Amino acid sequence: MGVESRYRGQVRIIGVPGLAGVADMEGFVARHGAGDMTHVLDQGEIWRRFGVTSQRTYVVIDDDGTWFRTGYGSLESQVQMLING
Image 1 (cartoon, rainbow, N blue to C red):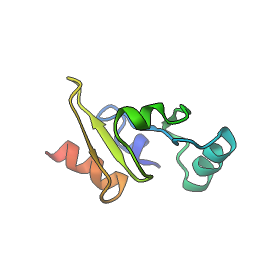
Image 2: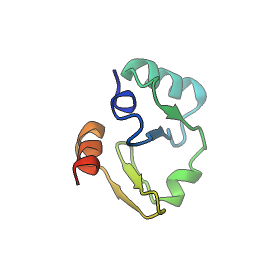
Image 3: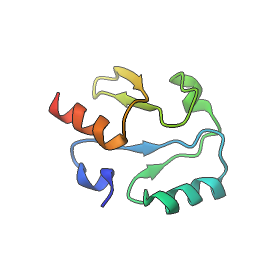
Image 4: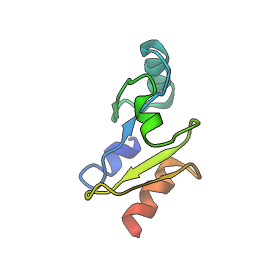
C-alpha cells in the first residue's frame, strides 16, 4: 500500500514528473509502486510555478492555498510531519 492509500482522506498526493514524457512517467510509477496516486504530465509549468529545481522536491499546499517547498526525507515522513503538526 502506497502513501496515497495510507493517508487517503487526510492528504492528496499528486506526482509531477517535470520534463519527463509519458513512457518515463509510467516506468517510474511501475518501478516505485506509485499507481495509487494521481500523476500530472505538464512539461515543467508546475515546477516553474513553485520553484522546483530537482527531483525529490515536495510542495505542500494547504487548504487555504499557502504553500512551502521541501526536499528532505521521504514522502512518507513529510506526510507524517504534516498530519502530526
